[in-house]
Length: 327
Image (cartoon, rainbow, N blue to C red; front, side):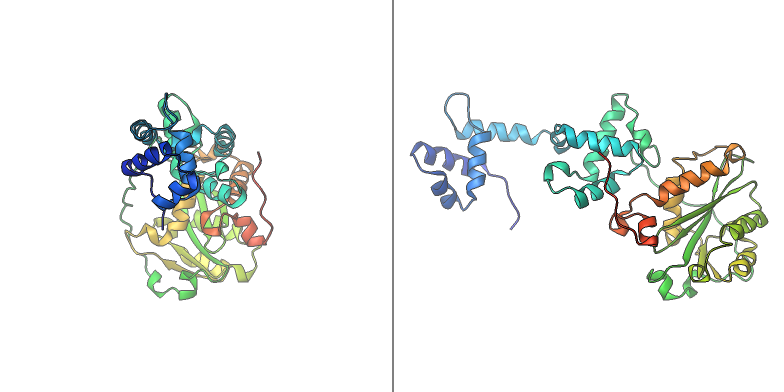
């Protein structure tokens, strides 16, 4: 049975039984409550004159309910400092919450994702900049927009014909691919994410031509073993018009998602969103070096993921031990 707060009738009984010199154990037994519940109630809601009276206790309890839980949690300074420190390092609220739950034994050092978001939103309202460390730099939640219509290519194979083993993520070597664009005529990135481990591979594009995308992608996978190159799932963007080049260079199979169905490649869409924190919309990739791109990719590959039980893609792919968060 889940815990329920004491009500006004129970506080009335506690007050009168306490005046009659009943023990905490007797009160708890009468109300079918835990001794700790009665003890905590007497300690927290005692009045200004007598040790405890139901009118005052109910008033104090009602006032306490008005205080948001995230404000109560924020009063624990070690937790707040640890959260803000790791948020600024790039962890999302959800990942940080899961990581703390995995590592911290004390409930005082655990916090929900929603509470972290509320801290960041409150910080933004007072002129703080902690929200800029969020993956998409939003001060508040926004609805996703529909993707634009894409034309279909001759010889494309639909995602409906993709092997079930790819959908179930039961092996390594199945990738989702896309382009992350910079500003107009400012290049972009070819991004590929391995479905099981969430491992990211990315390379710079000097233009949006399909041949450029395929040549860059082929070079990225040049030294990958064949067992890690099984399939690629892509959208219907013009950069995949020459998908046969990728199939030939990697000896793999390319499958196309359905139009208006970005969720069929949700992993790659999400990863591109994470990359935006390093390369905002409109940035000029012609002025960004390969080392800068490599460092951003490494950071994401060492970023905990909830779907990986809060391990990192690197830890999963290379089967290494989890590294504790820095304090």
